[in-house]
Structure formats: structure tokens, C-alpha cells
Amino acid sequence: MRIGLFFGTFNPIHVGHLIIANHMAQHPDIDQVWLVVTPHNPHKEKATLLADHLRLDMVRDAIYDSPQLKVSDIEFHLAKPNYTISTLTHLQEKYPNDEFSLLIGADNLRSFQKWYNWEQILAHHKLYVYPRITEADAELNLSDELSKHPNIELVNDVPILGISASFVRAQLAAGKDCSFLLTEPVLRYISERRLYQK
Ligand code: ATP
Image 1: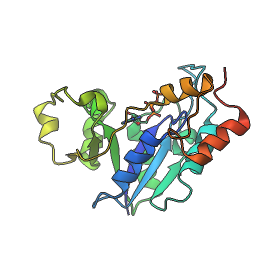
Image 2: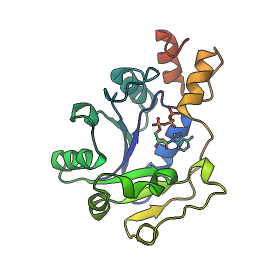
Image 3: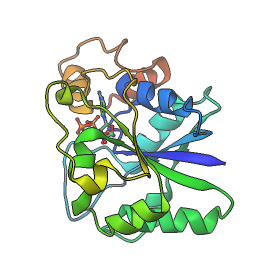
Image 4: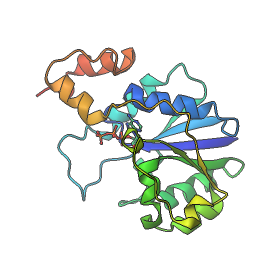
């Protein structure tokens, strides 16, 4: 199976994430998209970051009826700080018959050559790059090596919304209605536990 990995803190998972994941799961060369929840990093204490299991539950609830979308907690079990290359290596060992690619935003592609072992990632995995809203008038300015690389595909028909998890958290903290920013199961999960309240 060909699996696209979509990494995020998903604090919380919102419709912007789900639209990208679902759109990429329809790509002719992708069979499933796995949403890989990034764990809390003890070296980067962040008060606004909800516990790992809560974020994982919300992702699971958000995708429960989408057969092509799966949630992964693989990074919860890897040594910290963790690098994408080690997640890929672990997944490849665990699922030797599957093919893993990365789904990343255009903003991340620009700094991709700073990633640990990026050459190794690119030699063995495809990168599907979705646009970011801030890229609308900005040039990508990729190096020749990236712009011509056969393992990098720019997917430009992804509908991108100007929503971020930080915006959603601020709305929730202000007691605003987030019905159209979050899916119903996620909204219910949050309100039952009174998460993201001030
Ligand atoms: P925060 O505001 O807390 O930084 P976020 O929603 O931007 O949250 P993550 O939960 O880590 O960030 O998102 C996972 C990935 O999805 C990130 O790599 C980010 O680039 C991308 N992403 C998030 N929101 C959008 C959006 N509205 N459009 C396109 N990409 C997005």
C-alpha cells in the first residue's frame, strides 16, 4: 500500500487539516493518509499543548468514518528529540510491504534542506507538497536540486483554508462557536472535557 504521512501536533485537529488529508488521500498514487500525531517534547515545554492521548483521541474521532484516513501514534514510542528520518525508518521496518511518502506544506519544503538527513529521506520517499495560504503571492524559490527532483511533486489543487490550530484555540478560549472549524465529534470531545478554556 502507498501511504502518505501527514505530521502535526493537531492541537486540535481542525477542518483545514482534514481537507488536506482527505484531498491527498484521493491522489492517484496514494492509497491511505496517516495522520501522525507529534508528541509533547520535554525539551520544548509548551503550556498550550494538550496531552498526547487527548490529541490522539481527537484525531481518531475526527476520521472515524473515513476509511482512507488513519491515525498513528508511532512517534509517542520513539526516543526524543525525534527526527522524521527515524520515524520513516521505524515505519518501513514495521511495514516492509508498504511505501511511505510525506505530505508537507510548501513552507516546510523551503527549509527541507535543513532537515536531518534530508538527502536520505528524498532518496527513498516521495514528497507531496501542498500550498500554504501565505504562499499565494510568495515565490517558492526552491534550489535547483529540489525543484527538479523526481521525488518531489507539487500538488496545487488542494483547497487551503486560512485556519490554524492556534486560531481555533483562541476562539474556544473566548467562548466562540467553532462548529464550522471543527468536526462535530471533535467539538463534542472538547466541550465535554472543557478543553482549551481559559
Ligand atoms: P498551530 O497554530 O498550533 O501551530 P497548525 O494547525 O498550524 O497549528 P499543526 O497541527 O502542527 O499546525 O498542523 C499540521 C500541519 O498542517 C502543519 O505542517 C501545517 O503546515 C499544516 N497546516 C495546518 N493548518 C493548515 C491550513 N489551514 N492550511 C494548510 N496547511 C495547514
